[in-house]
Length: 231
Length: 113
Image (cartoon, rainbow over all chains, first blue to last red; front, top):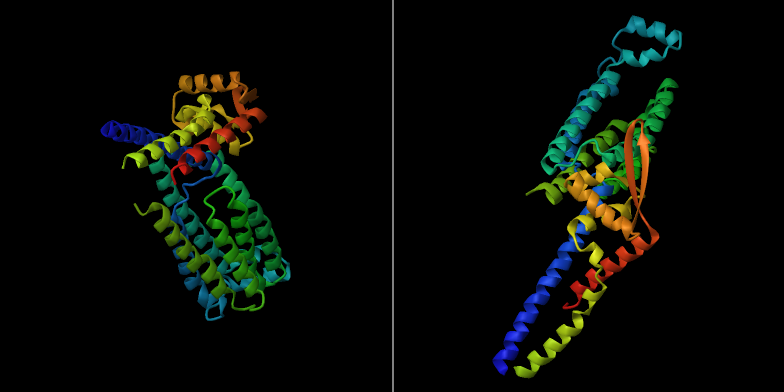
């Protein structure tokens, strides 16, 4: 009798354990499918690190031009003419503009590369409806910010450019956090905060810029890589 | 020993009840995947579902049909240019059924804790 009871108990218990494991697996599957269908989760931590390194190198190269150790203008004669005729293209006649362009593309292309690698490994399409939504939502505040900064530069308000970059980029990240891994929201808040503090320290923009786009990207990227991609 | 086993078995019996709330309609990974995607997106088209679930057209279509026939999901046929674009969305009753199913799964896990 006793042995029968014990046997019955174990058979019952193991059947129940299987049911329970099955339920747990089902719930995990549901959660994964919800995330995969609504968020672009192939964003790689290495993308953050590479973008951050690009920003630091860019800031380092730009430093002597920003703080007057080297002549900012590429062609002085042309610059005089452009200044007199209120020509927008004077911006193209500065070293800083081209350093910014190269830095942006280096950051963007290297970030794209690591995310492309990760999405290939996971078999999720890089250009699906989740990545499209992510790009659109990150772009809205950034395009608006870009236009705003363009006008600021035109009116010679250079001191507001760095805080402006940080604030609009931060808003882009916060806006995008609904469409990718949620941690990016906190990176966004940090960028906004740095930008706002920078508003009261005009003239030190490059340091804030390097801290936000350089150091914070690297810290965020390392954290994300450690959390999601290490294995 | 014996009485302990006895009570445990009775308790186990009681705890097994949540299975009754599990919906037979959601008894496959493909259907769970379809429902998960439709719960968090207002609508999803056939191709996106196919990529998400990594299954063949025929397999996906048969699961979608079963869910549609039970009024769990709605189908909308449209066009993008000349290409057909079939989108799926969840019905009110489908959402309710799926939430009940998830609650039953959660109950199963908590049962022995």
